[in-house]
Image (cartoon, rainbow, N blue to C red; front, side, top):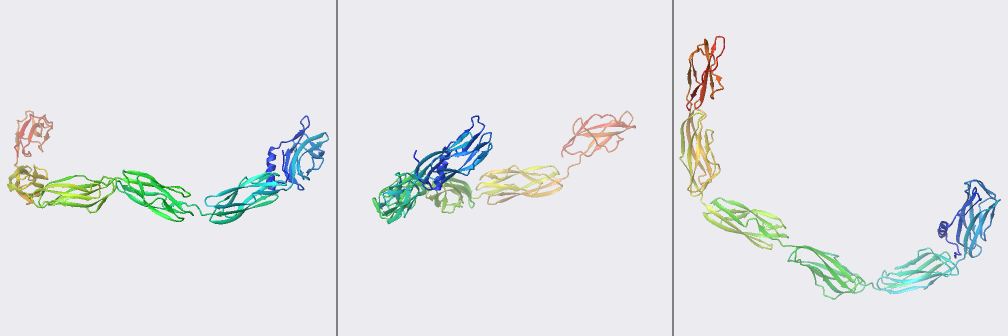
Length: 631
């Protein structure tokens, strides 16, 4: 193996020592029975390249790894240029003890040297330490070519190679630097070792930053010399380069069947002319306004249009591809848009039927417009035809987004009797621009309401009892709706009809009035009926009188008791067989009793008992029944 003959820089020296130390082996010598041993760390020493006349020193340590003391009495010298210092002989080391030493290399001539130090005791050599080193001398660097002229570079970058060679000696190249606008250098990782006669190749690159001639240099630094390589180059006009004002075009939502146009601008941002040979769009997109081939001078721009015409609903993507002789010969501009179906107008009720409406009155029905399409629409007109028909709650213009609804009122207010028809013509920009809503109704003249008889006289009615009489409501001219009826007093009550109710023209309806006097005396009231007739309120006179109920009594008698009774008790019940309640307040000594607390229309059941002088009461007698007439 050939080693270098020149001293490394301190940084490189540490690097070489580290590598060789990792590869070294530990030398050990000891007595045959292994009771003593002397080691050195490091076990081998590699000094690498050291310049003639200079010295490199490596620290080391001697260690007693045995179990008994060791005495080093002498050191046997190694070859030329190597020396040991830092140790005083004799050197005695106890087990485990260490002592530092320094090993140096001072070459006197060039060339590689291998040598061995011997450490001896009284019994002989106990440790060998191998050392290696190379003496070197400075060399001289040369370059091929000695200078580089890149000439004119119009686009991109130009690269040239330069070869560095070491002559007359060995060199360590530690640095390679390029100066000058647009110049750079690359090559092997530094530092790099060049033995005598060896070479290393570097690449020098020129990337023009502007037009015109520039100069620079590459400087190679080594431990022995430096080398400068002159550089020159001329930047020509930069190649043409196309750029788009809008890197992408977004058309948004466009109704199917319609189109949207956006503008795009291409600019030549390079230094030479560019010729555009092709401009094509894919999908539902088209290019217009760009005459091809089109040539753009440096800095010149041209504008054109891209149109999006969707044929179906949904997202649509495309691409605008520009082909030219620019440095970017193919340029793509993404295109995107969404096709939406046109607005479509529908109604909830295509035909509105109002039925019969009284002349002078009105009826309103709700109608709802809905946009069932995919894009907004605007209602601009709602034209109403037909006598008595109109709309309310609809303010125009009215815009409905997709899926949106709007409700308004359609009104029928007849001015004369008879059938009537009309129409609402809705005009919009929907796909169905004209939409018709038909309307039908009938005008009716106001009805007349009469009542017979006009007065109901109930006569005398026992207080608490009821009497009913009937009156008839008659409609003429048109049907009449009776919305309510009331008497204003609880003694007279209406029944027979549920309000509101309707009476057709020429027909009648019966109303029942019931009189239930609460007190004695004359009672009068009016039954009021409210309707949509021309005579909107109809009165029915009511009279009657409350009479007091008649007084009823039950006379009871019984046979005297044969068991020495001193008096009798009387009992009454409401059902046969009882239970019974005593009705005489005191013991009755006679065999008769009058019950004056009975009510008309009721049935009573009576029994009696006999009571002797000791207060003993007999059982019930036979039961008798008394039915009181009503009232």
